[in-house]
Length: 483
Image 1: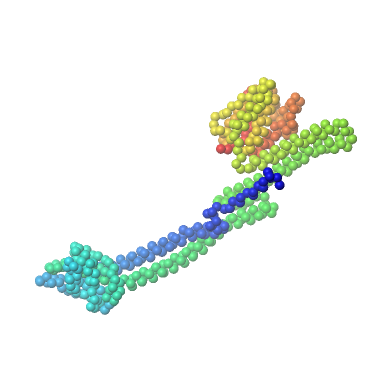
Image 2: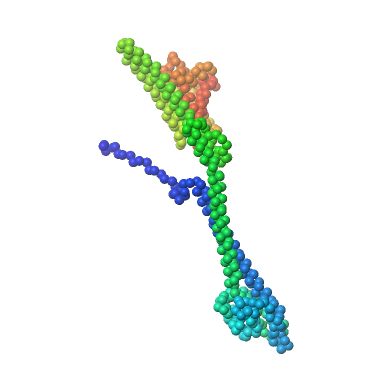
């Protein structure tokens, strides 16, 4: 291997984006996961919120019950003539009569240091007291009478946690303030809230499963038209249909339209290839037949010049069809673009020097507007525009005007000369393959303006011939533009 023959490494294989590797390849799975990704957190937050609201509501109801008991005790408090506090009647709730039932009340005399003495208590307390938190009761005694306070306290009469209600009051005629203490064991209501939460979460789990099943069913129904598209494409591939037919959902219809356009484009390419092969075979058939006949006649004197002429003819035909094939391939490619201004500047400068002895003057005018950019290959643009300007220089009277502009997504190149021009019939004939503008006085390769027409139409453009304002021929080339 020569030192310059360095092996070219194979192109790097570009994998899918990093984010897509985490997603399943199935579109159905992606849609289901996307639906569950927002619905499951929403269900969890809903369950947590409802559970918290229910727990808050049962605790609030317990606090209201404690406040009602305190109000009933306050209604029975009295003061005698000596200022001593008496309780006319205790609450008749049976839970306050049963020892260590979990419901308690107590009335204490408050002082600066907290509870100074227990005045009255429920039978359920037995020999225990609710005034165990001296600091809490001292703060309660410092408050203005009538302001209630709720708090949680550990270590009840039976070692249970307590939900406490405290309130400072001064009965009419009483010498000192007293504190109303009402307590309840919150565990029964909290256990009920926990059971509610468990039932709620179980219901939400069932709802999540049902939602997942419903999403899977919905996705299956929504993606079913894609199965129909796949079946129709298989029918096209097997030759049972020429295009995708049948009603499709409006979200899939643009896809089927593009697929039909792709199928039509492939048919055009195949038909174009067949036509090009046939034309090339026809173009080569006659020169080959002429050389065979001459060779069989045994006349060798004229054979070299004949072979040279026919070989040149075949070479021109092959070059022309290869150029068309290359242009056809590049016309369908993506990203091809060529700025028109440098191409026109180079062509006009070259042809001006080439035909300077004939007195030809080329005037290049740029129409106002955006800078024209051809959506195609620079070489094809040079071939088309160069052919038109060169014909104007050859067959015109010496004055050639070229106007270039871009508008409505198209590039337009107008070439005018002051020559004799062409009749309408001659214009049509000039666009046919193998016809030159002047068969007698000017040399040519026999392709004429037909090559320009073929290249332009490969790019979805066109060439029109008309009468110039200068009195000669006008050629208007229209090509697709890009940014």
